Length: 622
Image 1: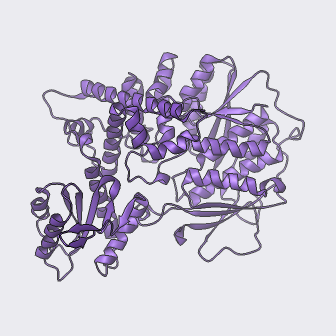
Image 2 (image 1 turned 90 degrees about the vertical axis):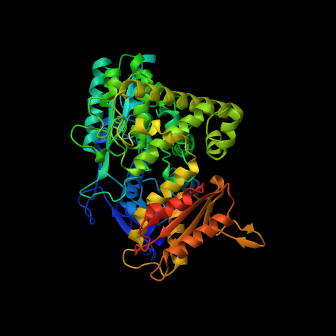
Image 3 (image 1 turned 120 degrees about the vertical axis):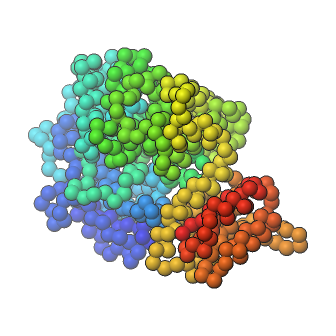
C-alpha cells in the first residue's frame, strides 16, 4: 500500500473535478497558460513547437500537454527527502485531472490503461490514474496551423531523441554517416546547461554535415519553482511523445532512441536494489509499452527503434572515433547529477553514468578526448570518501567481472528475473536467441571494463608512490570488488542506517527493541523486497531461533541489539555471543547495535572480538 504522504491529486490546465481530493491526497495545481485563474507555474513551448512543425492534430497536441503535465507532476511530487526516503515507500499514487481536446479518445478505457501501464512501469509508482475533461482549446500557433497544412520536407527524414548525451550523439553520427537522409534531432529543454550542450553539438554537427541536421527543441519545465523531486523517471514519456509529434508532422511512422544496451537494460548490480530505483528510460519494456500507446493514438503501427540495444558504451565511443567525431566527445554530457558540478566541469564524476562513461572512454582508447576538466571528481586518482559513490564503483566493477567470466547458462540462471521483462519485449521470435544476444552484450561490457582497468593502471600507477587511499587504483589493489556481495551489502546497510536512524529518533528514542526493528524494517523493505522479518525459523538443539531480519538470496541474517540506559555492554555482548552459537556457521551475521548513550566505549575492540570468529559484522549506531 502506498504511504499516505505519497498520494497526490493533480489539477492540470484548469480541470475542475466535481468532488474534492481525498483526505490522504496532497493537492497540486499545474498551469502553463497566462491569463488563467491559476497562476502560471510551468513553462511550455507548445506554440513555438507547433510553429516549427507547421501543424499538429488535436490528439497530438493533447499528448504533448499530457506528457508535459506528467513530467512536471513527477518533479513536483516528492518521494521524500533523501534522508527520509529510506523509511518510506518509493512508490507514489498519482491522480491527474486534465482538460483535453479529443475527450472521446482519451476517455477510452483501453487508452487510459495503456497510459497507466507505461507510466507505472517506467516510474515504479503504485498508480497513475487519469481523469479527462472536455472543452480544452488553445489558439492557433500561426496562420497555417490548420488541418491540411504540413511542413514542406522533401525526402526521407530520420527522427531521433537527442539529449546531448554521448549515446544520442553517436546515434546521430551513425545515421548521418550511413544514410543520406535528413536527421531530425528531437530535444527536451529544461536546464540552461543542457541547452548549452545541445546547441554546441547541433552547431558542430551542422558544420560537419551541412544542410542535413535539423533541430526540434521542445521547452518544458517548472517555472519559478525548485523541483522537490529529481528522479525524473517520466522524462522518457515526454521525450518520446515529442519525437512522435515530429515524426507524424513529417509523415514518418518511426523514430529512434539511441541508448547503449547495458544502460537501457540497467540490470541491478545488487540483489538488494529495488526495481523502481533502477531507471527504465530506454528499457525494451518501456519502449514496447509506449509503442502500444502511440499506435492506439495514431491508429497505425508505430516503429520505436533502439538501434544501440546490442551495443556497449565502449562501442558508442568507437562509433564517434571511427567516424572522425572524437573531438565532440567532451562536449556531450552523460551525468545524472549535473547540479553537483563546479567550475567548468560538466560531470560530477561519481554517479553511475559518469563511472560507466569513464570506463568506456578508457576501453575505447578515447580517454584523452574525454578529459579536459569535464569531471568535478576523479575517482581514478582521488580518494573516494563518499560511501555511496564507493559502493556504486565497486558494484560496477564486480558486475562487470561476473559478466566477463560467466557462461551463458550461468548468466541466464543468475539474471532470470530481469531477463524476463527484456525477452518478452525485444522483437525476436526465439527467446533463447534473445538471451544469447543479451549475454554477448553483457560479456563484451565485462571485457571492456577489464580492459579499461588495465589501461588506467598503466597510465596512472606510480611505481614509487602508493595511490591515494580509497582511490580506484587502491580499491582494485585491495581487490574490494572480489569481496562477497553479502559483505558489501552489510556495509551498505550499516552506512545507511548510521545516517538514517539518528534522524528517525532525533526527537523520540525507540520505545523498545521491537520499535527499533520496525524502523529498520521500513528501511529494508524498499531496499529489497526479499528481506523478511523474523524469518526463517532455525533449529538449535531442541529450541527454535529466529533472526530479526533476513535476506535468503544472500544468506544474510540480521540481529538488532538496543543498548538502553539499564542495559550493560556485557549483556549486549552475551546476546551476540549466544546468537553466533545458534546461527549456521555458513550464514553471514550482521549485528546492528543501537547505543545512543555510548555505553560501549571502545567500538573497535567490542566488534573485533566477534568479527575475528568469521562471517559476521558488528556495527554500532548512535
